[in-house]
Amino acid sequence: MRLLIAGGGGFRVPLIYRALVSGPYSGLVTELVLYDVDPARLEAVTTVLRSMPAGKGARLPVHASTGLSAALSGTAMVFAAIRPGGTAGRVADEKVAQDLGLLGQETTGAGGISFALRTIPHMLDLARLMRECCPDAWLINFTNPAGMVTEALLRVLGNRVIGICDSAGGLVQRAAHAAGVPLPEGRLDGVGYYGLNHLGWLYRLESGGRDRLPALLADAGALQQFEEGRLFPQPFLARLGLLPNEYLYYYYQRDAARQAMQAMARPRGESIHSQQQELYPRLAAAGQEAYRLWEEVRRSREEGYLAEARGAGERRNEEDLAGGGYERVALAAMRALAAGGDTQLVLNTRNALTAPHPPPPRGANPAPLQPAIPGLPADAVVELPCTVTPAGAVPLPQLAPSEPQLGLLRRVKEVERLTVQAATTGNRAAALAAFTLHPLVDSADLAAKLMAGYEQAFPALGKMWKGGER
Image (tube, rainbow, N blue to C red; front, side, top):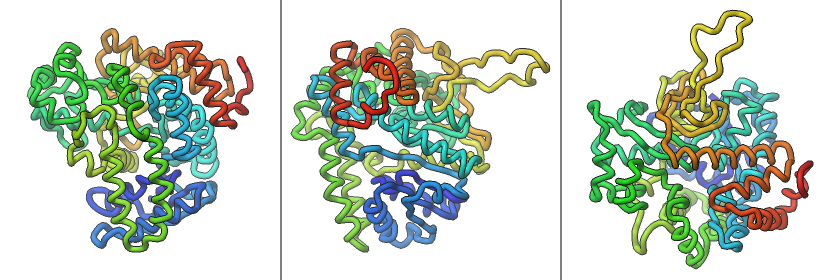
């Protein structure tokens, strides 16, 4: 199988390569193509791959390309992890919001809307080229904000696109371990999870016919064993009766998160930008030391993840620092799509249960699709457990969220849909409405200031508007 990584100069590409040449995914891919618009980043990453120690496999052919059409030809699978504007764009996404006293985070709140507005047009270009050059290929989307990007791509690729994020699946695994609930490889039986990307809750964790989640939420010691359990006070979790995704820290602890970010000597986006500006030339020149250098920086970067939510001196767990999140989810999905055996994963896909069988009689109107997460539109992209087969991702039915969870999901989904509308039609009024409606903004005045700030930071954004208020 030929695999193309769009964004092949990305910092995490060596994690994917490492997984492809060792362990259960070895041999799944016969040719790896790295595509990127930046040849210097491609050179640095290929140097890291060539310097990977013996035993982690150097036999997988790797080709680097800055020509997308040629790279797509003959490709069966595409991983997409692009960042238009690079890490400098992330700095601006976060800083415009922070300067207005708002949360400055790359995928959540105002920064996530800005990121999506800039990114979706580029991802649609990729999808259209796929339709021309490799129409039977699957797109596994890492590109953030994953839910919004995946929803936009469905219009071009239909069910041949799946969005992935390791946050929800990691929560399930960590909670199960703390609760002593065995989860067989590739199975999520007894697991209940509903939400959107970076906005979801674990609501059931069954073992032996009994839900073990209430006992976990009542056990302060067990909750201290994993990150999500430490993020929120135990009495709060017990009252909630759910285990939130880590990104809900920005909603439940909004003021604390904002103050912690503003108190940091340097925002995370700026730290990563400075780090990468210095690192990539060093990697390209490091020869056989490139992999060691990359691994040192990777671990340091993992240690800084969600630092604003941890107490002074609190370190992440070793298993979280070891890496293996996104690439494990992506490769497990890829293997199932390639007829390597069905698997169950938490994914971003359309909120629709499979069509009824047998199909309706000829000439009859098809029955409306039923939502897998009741209360949310069946055609909306959500994040939930799915079974992945060679036909795609099939959502597993979930219980209806309670209020206020459902209310928050509906509101943020409307924000996402307005953002997708703005990015795909050039409607500035839709973008302004998205900023206004988001719970972490919730102000027409601030929305107007955010829009002006992002248009100044990203001149191309202001040029894309074709209708609506200017």
